[in-house]
Length: 440
Image 1 (tube, rainbow, N blue to C red):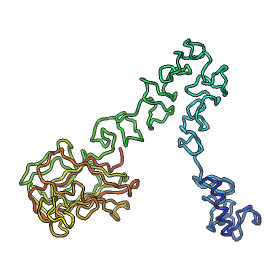
Image 2 (tube, rainbow, N blue to C red; image 1 turned 90 degrees about the horizontal axis):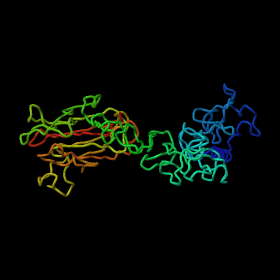
Image 3 (cartoon, helix red, strand yellow; image 1 turned 120 degrees about the vertical axis):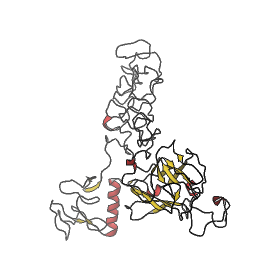
Image 4 (cartoon, one colour; image 1 turned 45 degrees about the vertical axis):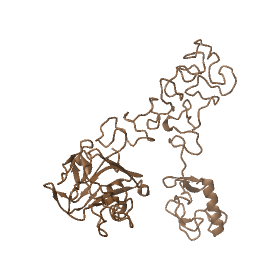
């Protein structure tokens, strides 16, 4: 809110609620409010126009005697209000036409006063040969070029003259040689030209289009960019942050129970051979009701709890499972396809069921993102019965909406419950390439 609006609002509230006047107003003794004692810095503590105790220097309160308000505030008309952005901070505010931060200058595309460089403003910009501040075709034309520019002859003061007004070739229409930073995109030479020094926007300082793998993070399209094609270092070839589980350090500090851990293959069963994960490499998961020596079996109730990270808007990972899924047909559809025509199990016996939960209070409470037995999201692929054979590269790409928790530190918990120790074909549940981590 602007200071004028804030002042008007507070003034209106003060009148309507009959609050005492501010120091210096008619009827008020200078330096004190009735019934209040002076503060140590010489300013007096009083009440705001809405009747709340008000410490000089705080937002919406009188300025201290030295005029210095609390951090983030500025003194305007005797009151401490939020400080608005300033020209040169690199943030475009309502009152600014542009703001390129430290690259603001009167000879740049964004001038020192945060106005756009235009021909006729009296400042010679990157693509101008001159600028005398008028629109007369005198010593400097209305196009900010020398009078001889465009005749095809190289005259004094011209860097080039190709006799045309094409700004996208090697010579600008102002008879300056095209260069990166002049704000004009030159065909065959540049992919972009935004005339600023910000290397992390859509156009780098080299005027070449940012591409994944160039080592420069494009804030609009990339989560990371480490300049290599190694998919196992936390930043993938598609410039996305992913936890690949290729290193034991990737689960360092995680709380693991049961058989959760790192695997390079799904275990053998009495019906099938092991399935090496040749494409994905080492992955994270649990072998479910398998027990060593394979193909032994046991009942498992286990969890995997991550360390804290910033929750993304969408949780993404790859999933591979061979088990009974953990969900049953909806009421009214006994013997549905999820159980191959078999009757559903008794109430609450959702064999090989899975849950994913999130906590944003250091594990004090947990909210379900997925509950294969009862919902939400009980129709996700890993909640459905899947029998062998399953190819090693047949992974499901999972996306779960986590917008409700996004942007704050939190943890994930993966839960697996086999319900019993009976087995025929189960090989467990495995995940990989999870985006729930802080970028390297």
